[in-house]
Image (cartoon, rainbow, N blue to C red; front, side):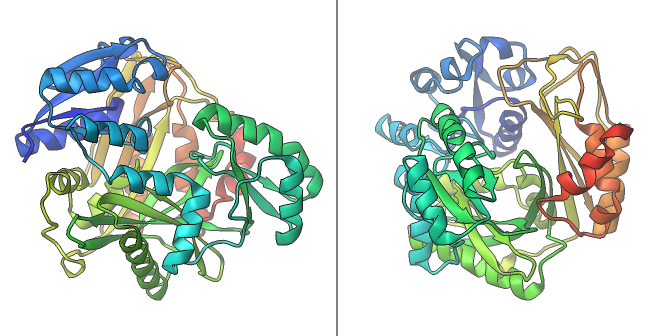
Length: 451
């Protein structure tokens, strides 16, 4: 087992990894930007190294600085968290060259799933259902229009290297495609360094459902049930829950088996997530694979009793999984809401100083955050500042607990999306489990005048 791990991330996920490392008796090393010098995760780590100025390309994406900190501290492994370098095949390869264990899959696997176009081809080979679409890169508007005629509108225009909804847009006609292509291609190039675009058939009223897996390097793969992630704004998740209130037991078993099939086909190892779009008739289609820990992993932990970070570390250290599919039981229901420093009416970031901060407490309540009174929320990083998770014996109990906890949450000095979250988890459609990816547009946006 490792004696020291460096966490190449910041905020609540850095604290989350630190907590598990402490439980396992492993020392931790934090890296931080000048803007995060006084942050909670920096103080909680056993060691901490400044790796650059606030902009991410000068700090948290500073591969040379992170590797230097690992070598100086004697860290044997690096946990990348999520976002930033977590799905960067080049970084994983660099760790290997430097003799540092990357807590995640092999670089080749990350690269193969990093391109959505290549991932679609691979999943088709694996026998996993994929959405009808174009499996080649579209370089310009003319190519896109020709491809669109083959599939038929409406379509989803997507960035092959995309994530977080960036470079993605619904197009209903050739005119809309023409207006959307150049802008989305430019955004994809700016965010991911890759402007490759492709098209998929649009599925109306879809559910976004993902399957969490654990896999080791000995061929053992265990699915840990599914998460419903359909409530999104700007194609980014804001509410997640496990299990899904929508799918049947039969569909669940088929999706879990498909996820295992996908992971086995590519020789996957460590924690990963296979994401699916599910239509109204419960037909499911591969969307993408996340070769890392997910923001919403706590809801899986709450219904299984597992520590996914601990399992990641054990697998990375060369240990086989100690559990089988038959060992994993689901207990109760869990809901996670993401708390953002943003205006709940516009969804625009709201940086500033937090003047008062009080976390909610209560049975079944779990908080994941790395802020406190006095924290300066800067414009340099993703505006998600905390996560609130509620567990209950039933979905009804979990819904009640998450609503009460949100109402007890106190953050002053900045705007947050808490009013939006309260409206969401209180809505009759949510309480009935009748949700899909159109929820925010259909049921939340009309409520804006009342906020």
